[in-house]
Length: 349
Image (cartoon, helix red, strand yellow):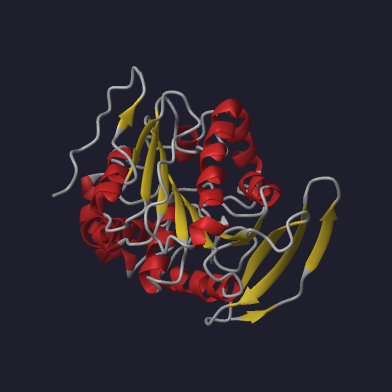
C-alpha cells in the first residue's frame, strides 16, 4: 500500500496535531487517512486505530472519539474504507468485505509496528466486525481492542425481510450496486440526539441511500461468520461497550462475545437506557461517562505495570456510570440498581 500527498494542521490549544493523507491499496484505489497526534505526550502512550461504521467516515463522524483519545495521550489513526468518506469507490458499496479488511490490515499494521505492546483497535458498529477480523488475521499483534456496539449479528429490527434474504445472494451477481434493500432508517435508530442526526444527514461524506444489494449481502455474510465461527477465536484483551436499548446491533450478542471469547482479559459494559451510537449520538453526560470507561481501560493497559502482565487479567475495571452492568474476568459479576430488565446469559461452559 503506497502513500499519497499529505496535509497538516496544528490545532493550537486543543492538545493534538491533525493531519490528512492517503494511501493506494492493492486494487489501485486511493484511500483517505487521517491522524490525531498528541502534543503533550511524547512519545504517545500508545496507538489507537479507528475502524468506522457502515456509511460513515473518520474525519468528521469519529472526530470526537479521536480528539478525546489524542488529548489522553494516544496517537490516533483513521482510514476511510473503499466507498466511504473521502476514499475512492462507489458511495456505500462494499463489494468484498475481506478486501476491506485487508486494506485496513495493510495500513494499520504498518502504522502500529512502531508501538510494540501498545497497539489498539477501536471499532464502532460495522467497525467492530472489522476489528475482530483484523485480530483474526494477526492473533498476537494487537495489544487490545475496544468494541463499541459491535456488529457481531444484525439486530432483527434491521435485518432485511426474509423474502429479500432468499434472493439476495443470487441477485448480487446481477445487480450488485442497486440500492434495493429496504431497511428502517438507521440514523433515527442509531443516534439519540436530534443534533447528531442532523449532523449525519448534513454530512456529504456519509452515505444515506438504501443499502446496495452486494453491500447488504456482505454485511449479513460477515455477521453470520462472526456469530458462528469467530467469537470463540477472540483471544486478545478487549472492552466491549453497548447500549441496552440498541436497536441496530444486538447487545445480547456482545454478551455472547464476552462469554465465548477465550481472552483472559475481557470486560463488557452494558449501559441501561443508552442507544447505539454511544460515543457520538448520546446525551453529553452519557458520552463523557463512556469515554471515562474507555480511557481508563486504555490507561490500565499502557502503564508500566501493565506491560508486565503479558496479556492476563489486570484487575477489576469498574464503570464510571452508576447503573452500568459490568462484567469482567477480573471480578464477580456486579449489577448496580437499575430498572433495565435485560439479563446476561450464564457463563459458557
